[in-house]
Length: 439
Image (cartoon, rainbow, N blue to C red):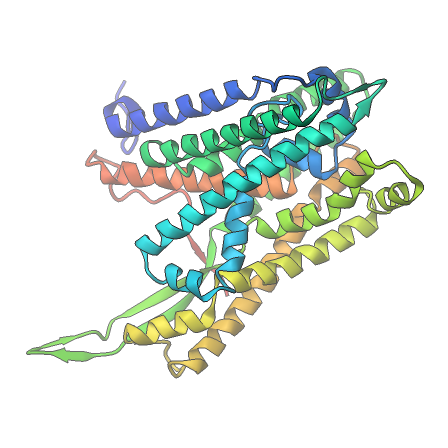
């Protein structure tokens, strides 16, 4: 049978095949490490504890680690210390002039900032690992502690092992980025999240067989989720085009410049950071209530019940707030205006310098407001599915945004490799995810 035009056989592209196989191998190694437990921890009791910790900060971390925390795995911390360090360095770079200068030095400065980020990751990973070991000692399920062997030695040993686990995951992520497909750290988080899908699907089928769920609700829920995923893809591929005109200059006997271009600004500039910040802030009291049992913490836990309207209203507002906060950190309109002026570019109808910065600031404000509302709406979806349609479905919010975003970036990289190949029907093919112009 003749292969349709434009369809390329994977074995015919050695680079793509090798990259895919290498990526799958690295992710397989990561998943094996999930089931290697720390010494001195009662794993079965820990799983029972995490079964009651859904909706707390621990449940969120367990989701991002792919179930490594409930298994007391050597990869229990995942790459969260590195993500936390990256966010801290991003915030510090707006405060300290030295870091601001490094960001403007290009690749050399970026490498220096990455080095500082790793130093901070080492400190945070050891501190979080030792603190987690201490928390296991202080947590009791039934009559026994989650830590079979406690003490200072257990805390230090656990901190060192979890530190090594986190740095090993960073090394795996680096290798995937260099020799595989996609961003390695993002793919590790992606793999951890989708690892829970088979179990969720199995639970859904079991409830259907037992008659505890209405088949029509399940069908409507799945159809609605497909629409939501499509909407997320559409938004994540949308951007605002700001027209840029380059000034005409005379160089010798030639006239250069005078061409038009555009500055693409994503609709969702802040990505998934606002939901992570907001959920971490709201889930902290719920996490404390898991360890500290008294009337005050219990009342706070009841007030901040993730299924309550109050929780979701506060959650929605915090997401919009953090969307503006983080966008202000990563996008400085005055720096962009200065760079445009140095390059001899300007926005038609807008004077260079401060006027350009004010114009870009207005564009960013409008985009951030729309992006924040979009993030807030997606993040409260699990509540609708659980309470509104009586479905045991929680794959939404931050997890959905991460999965869709990473999948789109990975597909783009695969397409870039295909487009670089000189096979018939590949060059000139329209990409799956084209950017859409909004506003």
